[in-house]
Image (cartoon, rainbow, N blue to C red; front, side, top):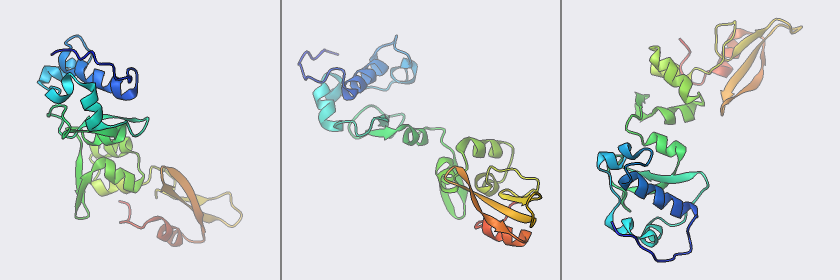
Length: 196
């Protein structure tokens, strides 16, 4: 590995720091995390290893502050065809231990199902670890109530004694309304199979 001394004027930029980190991961045995990269035989392609300019031509400017280089194939080298700028969320989904769930006739990553249901990923993981069926683990809102029905509360303090409905929407509980009967409340909460 030779060193390119050409001045490119981009030292210290996010792109140049990324290129340097990749080289360290692949070739510096004293670098933190080397065992997961160079230690596993992962290399930087010949086109990039001695040329930041080629790396920049191929990868371009980092598109967002919260992106970093991700390899599509985690066992593959750092090459133009195998690398992309990705968010941390996208990179987590690309891990070799990512969990796939098949239900409703479709197979998706657990993280994708959680995005659809708005149930936190860690909660769904915990529920599945406890043996919950996938549909219930992913689509039961993270809300406990004395009624025993997630998302439905009987308000004893209200003068007209109504069933209050809250839905888990985009990671927050949203008040939907109040209803005279439990059946009416349930009809507002569940647009997917009823809870177990």
